[in-house]
Length: 285
Image (tube, rainbow, N blue to C red):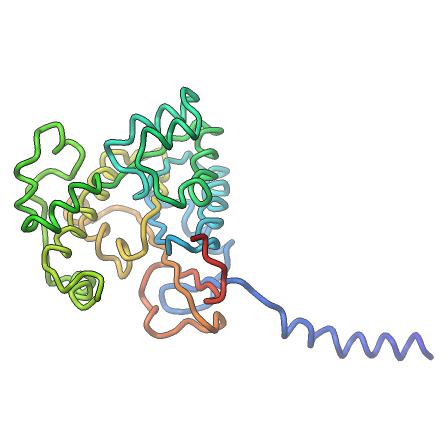
């Protein structure tokens, strides 16, 4: 009788524990419908290009980038690329990938982000271990700063031919009326500057240019970038479409919410897949 009573208690209480299960993140489709990692992987693994829009300090995004790279590589050949490596640092990155220098040497030769060792080295080391190309796609930051501080895109005309090889071919296509660019003007850190928007545009155009330069029909290109560069299918995507509107690509975005069990309306349509992370998740810096 006691055993039966205990069994009945377990049957009643176990569902209650399930209802209080803590989850760090949830995945949604562009329409805000619940999805899963497996469904996302199945949808992405046959694409030519995947743009993974991250929040730079979000550990869930960095972990899923690594897991996605590992799992995609089981199905198809992979090329990796990232905003976090500037074009003029590609030679140093190649030396690291080829085992010619260690991480300390890479840190001394390249301008690495402050969270590079914690957040990006695992993915770079995965590429190194598998012989996977890893492409830095970002404009050297000093050139983006030049656009911002010295009068906009026209400031790039003074670059040498060698320097221009590290950015998208000039002049770039530019539409200041794109909704995401117009939002930038309202953001406090941009100081409402049209030049800041143009600096963002040359970043987007440069990443798009070097992605296109390294696309391979036999490989999937997985690219890491701040979410703002691909959210709502603008930024990099817009520039890609200026050259090839037939690309079989998909986007991912990362968002923070207090309640991850329903996607907030502002995030609907942000990307093909939206990774919704608990806002209390620890930051990497």
